[in-house]
Image (cartoon, rainbow, N blue to C red; front, side):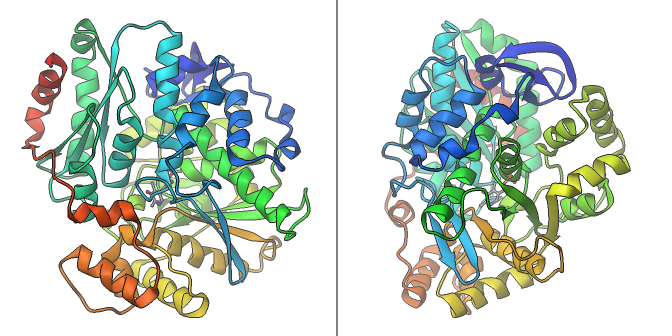
Length: 491
Ligand SMILES: *Cc1c(COP(=O)(O)O)cnc(C)c1O
């Protein structure tokens, strides 16, 4: 399988190089060049357990790796609290696909438990003698999931920058107490964009210096194709669960509703659909930063708009990077068209797709959004009616999915699977507020109150944060980021 960039087909690489590099030098994202999605036999997967599904799907995309089976085994052997990895729960009229059973309680674990092993295997097979340093800027969830995934993986180190005071206390503790001898985190004075721009700038200015010292820089964020592919698996898993429980027969169409930020999770669902999984509609759920709702309605993507801080911070995003892959695929792999849209986005902050392309997108993608008020009401109401406690991101998907069910759309009555992307205990402030519990500044007190009122146990990995020693206390300015990296490499 060869990979190429969404912005130009000159640069052609085997899959392991695409995984190691993460981003194409022309700024585009890697896509499989000669993938015949239709040759995939979806129905052969329905009887398989999670890990075997993962092996089949990963081998389809990454056919130049010699031991995918071992990569999958290492990723999912002990890291999730259930053999099922991503269980499905029937709640009211919906199904909830729980993606938060990994070590950091957010759905990013599903991909970030696997990507590090995939990278290590790729580095070994390309015969590179260099060390790899993963650099990541995070607004909260990605950083912790990446540190946990790369922890003690041989030949790879990871450094995560987060905005000082810009992540929740629980998220900060999750990172500063992280175990492992190859992990490091550091706070940067400024906001998330400062940290992110700093990291991009390090790639531009320090890549060669680092390479000369025997360290290759790479990234673990969601534009890496090695993060996207592992997410396809749980769409198959959810579908096969509904078959097994007799709710559907093999071949019946279903809808998925996905709480969306960077468009990675929902794009994995689109890949599953292309591979023959009977997905009718993918419903894209946003918060008040509803740039995708507008795009999917009008065909205009316009980031010239206010940025809102919401109670679903992992979806507070105005540039949904992975949408580029969808535009590329649905324009018939037209790299120059995709590149022109992305040029418009960087120069004018907006682009508009052709009416034909918009229509194609809308054949599969429906959309909607929920603001903070609606999100909290949904958490409270679903708990009251069904005894099921959701985090704010999941609640957005639930609310949008209900709107879709009553929309009069011809597909509105199909079985609907809502993706649940985080444990409610990751966002104690918003969840306790939704349940109308007393206010507190201590997130641990709020967790206790949520447990007392809901009966849902506090995940061990969050409970232990109260007593774990803090290992990393660095706070630097963005001007000091370069030096921080250079010092780390000298060691
Ligand atoms: C990252 C994240 C999302 C958004 O996923 P994308 O792949 O960026 O669309 C939703 N919910 C939670 C809890 C997340 O951490």
